[in-house]
Length: 578
Ligand SMILES: Cc1cc2nc3c(=O)[nH]c(=O)nc-3n(C[C@H](O)[C@H](O)[C@H](O)COP(=O)(O)OP(=O)(O)OC[C@H]3O[C@@H](n4cnc5c(N)ncnc54)[C@H](O)[C@@H]3O)c2cc1C
Image (cartoon, rainbow, N blue to C red; front, top):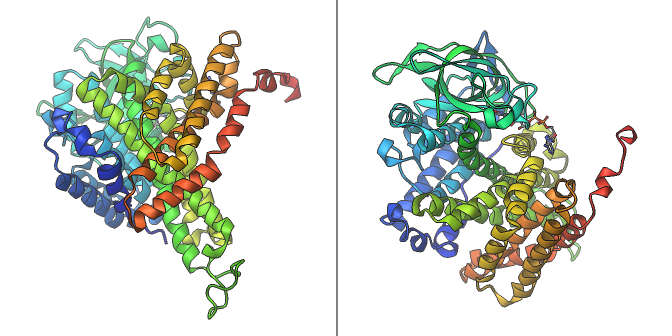
């Protein structure tokens, strides 16, 4: 049985000891009035929804999955009530614009709530995250009429969101999409085409579904420069702004998937459906990226939620399960055996999970802080940092999330492989985060190509300089300096070698992204060790920091060697030799 409780103590530590959010927020007028009590109340309430409403329907959602019958999609038992609780609690509008009835909370706080929701029930929260993402896109690019029509309904969860990019022949390469949009005399458009893999494309949880769809206008330029974005609602809003006439779009089928089985993934057919241009013509991909940057951070946090859920199961199991004896002699002399925690290798697995999860939580908040500073204070440096770090957050958090889920499964031994304990579900649910929202390979290319090579590494070097400014405990200072120096060295080497080798970036991009992630985690661990209080919680933090520096950070040496290899190593094989 999967049990989830929100990591409240660690969250409070990050908010009030590590990031000292009041210091950050007093410089952001929109947040200046937020008291510690208000923030605590939001976190506590979010934890309740996660632990008491969403988590209890997680396993049955996986067992039942969604069903499709002639275009009608039914979600698992209990999902509707849990979705309504999320919606009525205002959680979809947590970071939404107050002008349109959003709650106006910082993304930094939103990241923490999202982690709880992902951890409690990944499949269910997918309906929420796409709703949040769609509202962000409409807020950024919609006209006043569109914002008034859609935002309050999305923030309240009465209507939900979906994102239609992928087509059967066009996944990563969206320039090839075939969905067409024809201008109509009333200023709207008629959308025709078939999208596949559409999360929350059809379901029974909300009154209306707002599809944001990429399509091409007649005569549009070839490739990605000719893509426009459209709002295509399942029910076209009437004059009062309520869900009106049924639009001509439908779910052709749903996918049978490895995990997130409670999340409906549809083939969506658009047959001359009424749509409304969102943003400028041919700027669709740029507009969609507003949504995707938030979604990508959120999908990274999906990995984090899975890792926390998995750790909670593994640590409980390790304390209860009796197998073998401690190498230093029995610790449970009256029992038939000691528990799993006496075994150094089991501890290695648990500490690895903990080291990645606690640093990951801090990392998500740090990226959220950059998004807040960029959005509310027009802080150009923070905006550049958020763009640099988005692919790292998406890929590094989701990779580590899957790794942690597998480690938790390993702690369970054979009991992790069978369904009874639920840990195998976490592994299956976590896997998708490495694939959708742009595969992690594509995130690594985005980091190295668009975010590093394009400015010769300047933004990354500025971030490293900023990180170097922090005081950290003496015991970690030299290792951290070495880690920063290593990243500077590897970046300079890649910038130089990539200038005359077009295949270099793609051949070392994943090692490079991992090196950036590990270096940032080292900085966060050193800072967390420094900020940790002098009590049991703080002692555990410092011990985990030591584990990270001794057992995980050394992996950076191997990454430097890998990133130093020439592209020949991967490109020399002929196609026939594969
Ligand atoms: C459960 C699920 C839910 C999804 N939800 C949505 C959704 O809501 N909306 C939506 O629009 N889409 C959705 N997707 C689609 C998802 O985003 C795509 O599957 C993903 O972007 C990859 O596209 P693809 O599957 O066509 O793979 P491909 O693009 O064919 O890629 C195959 C492999 O080649 C690599 N590759 C491709 N191009 C390059 C390149 N230029 N350089 C280096 N490597 C490359 C990829 O990294 C990958 O490893 C979903 C998919 C799934 C499975």
